[in-house]
Length: 226
Image (cartoon, rainbow, N blue to C red; front, top):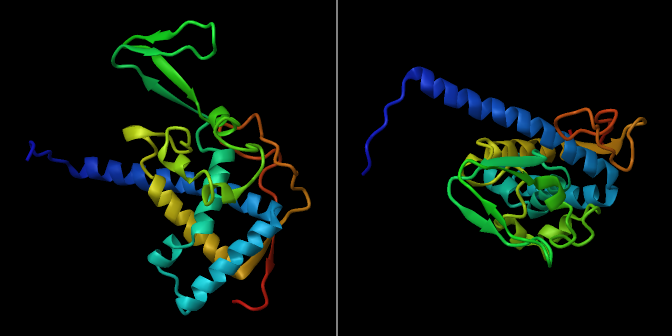
């Protein structure tokens, strides 16, 4: 056992504050992005709703954590949304030891990194690179079920960052998003609002990933649910 670490009430409160508020901000943006994409792709929405309705029926209307975790198509939709519109556009990391990067293209020289150098990792371009994703500009949730599932465990897919400094509330945000989306689609049909811009156009004045004009959605209550 290593040396013990003691925490004050202030330390613990600060950790809880960072966790819950980090998850709130992350989850709210993620939920808006996912519902936006679902509204823009009604076929995807119908398929997901069928899975959600089945889970509600099996759980007698009270879905559990295990039930939500078992909706693999919802996972695929969320992952595909985060691939196209990651929570972070780029990452920065501090180099701590010498390392040589191979030439990016034939005829170019390798790049030597030195301790103290700051690296900027372009998450958004990596997620749109056809070398890693077929038809990268198309919304295809099936890619995370059929052929590209390995990407989840690689250094190519990093919507919340990567390594020990990735978003502290990643799992919490994912759970929040999945529970809310399940409840939303079980009760409503999500449709594009009258001012919704299609295809998705990013707001270049915003730090976070948001569409031009904001999220414009319309909800239509389903008659068969309450």
